[in-house]
Length: 296
Image (cartoon, rainbow, N blue to C red; front, side, top):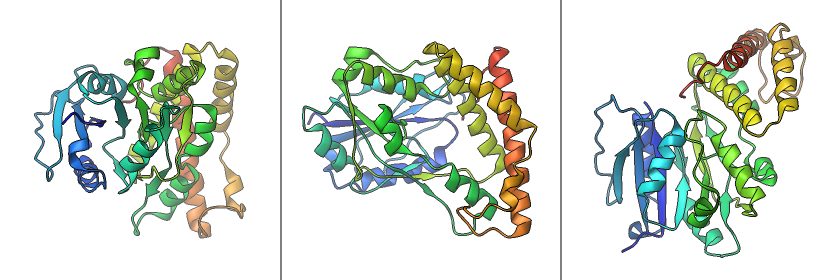
């Protein structure tokens, strides 16, 4: 039977998290013969194989070009369905995720759909990390109003790809935003469906959080350059430079934190945020120096 949906998942290093994602897909309420799962190995040096997950229609393809958007493009090229759904290895689709996609895109008036991305935090997480992650949560509904969605939770009709093309494969971050805005400009509006829910296994160590933020900063400047938005690029660079040299002491007295941090944890949080700000500024300088962005 020809699948109705092709789910595309790029993977770089996060093979353990991928297993949780695949088990969640195997537990969807959509019949298994109606969708296929394409895992794209973007870590060619890793000799990886996929173990069967229940009766999931699962296969793996390989992409040598570094970057998740190049990997997604490879997945699109191997997909059999007319609806393409995207998520990431560290995401956990809720049981009704695929049904929400079908309910929306079965209406031919709808071209694209996205939904909420909800952070998954373990009970014993460091309160400083928990405070940061809650403040940095995805705002999928607001982004959808602007015409784009993160590829951790987005689906599109293939006709949109046929019309505007693939993702910019050489980008390390921001490619979903750039592609989404291009689709919006071409008249392919995006619908926000609250029932299209996905959990996101957040990063818990500073090193991993730092790598992600440097990648995002690099991707933001890349988007500005590709859309000729030099004004926003200059404004962002100045803001990052200013914040890099100003410790965020406001968090000592701020009452609207997500968590009731102790005074000690507030000072730890200040150090965490200031260190991250400095690193983000370095990522901006690295972009202008012609350096490459982080892969994850």
